[in-house]
Amino acid sequence: MLTFEGKRYDLNSLPDDMKELVRGMQVADAQLRMHEDTLKVLAVGRQSMALQLNERLKNVPAIED
Image (cartoon, rainbow, N blue to C red; front, side, top):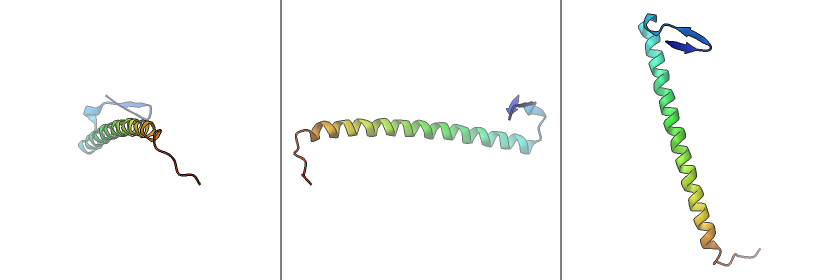
């Protein structure tokens, strides 16, 4: 069963080219989810590094303007 834009279709009855489009969209969706997860991991890692840098800079005098 394929649900697309609020309508349901029998996936098995669709022509092969349409089935291939559906598969391509599924792959694209999976890749998007994977990259979104990667971005989340990178953001958490960056935040952790920023916290570490902030903690270590507490003992370093800042340059006055």
